[in-house]
Image (cartoon, rainbow, N blue to C red; front, side, top):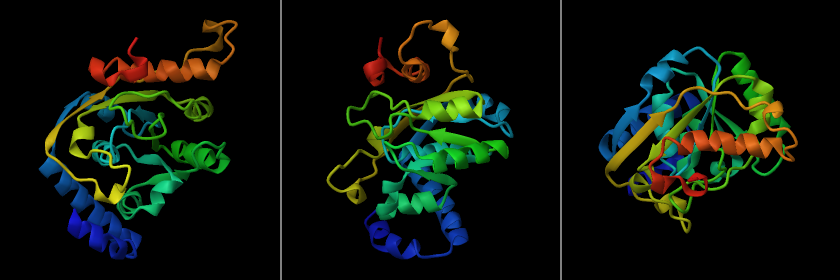
Length: 235
């Protein structure tokens, strides 16, 4: 990691085609060395190939995107990624090596939504971390309901994915993201069945239907997680 920290600023200047090749090599090596993957529900991903899908996942670590990108390589996946990730050499390298759509968190980013809809319309899929940031508690935190707008407009199935153990492989370092250190650990990935949002008629009189839909979606993830990971969606 120390070597990568020194050379990544230079690597990020290379043509995108080379960065993508290097990205596959480096991330594949890191996963094989540090993450002992156990995956449940691979058949769901296989069934969703060539079918527009929105994948939602809990978010524990910067390694989450690497894990999911490796699993979704046949699903034409593009990640919704906060623009701030471009500022760090590590996350910038990863973003350049995958399909992603930059989004400004906390704002109605119409351009990002439009790009996501276009990608879905061409047969691709979208990956979203609805919590909007990595959990500092190691369990689910309150969802940011903005992703529901895309789900409503896209009118495609949503597939929940539950991650466990990535917070051990690459623990969060809020003081210096570039100094985060990899550790060897087991990682559990569970892929759930596709679902659609509940209709407004199912919750007559509800003041915030989008909030209900967001919580409904997160509970799909929580149901697959061990209790200690369920956080605010534990009940």
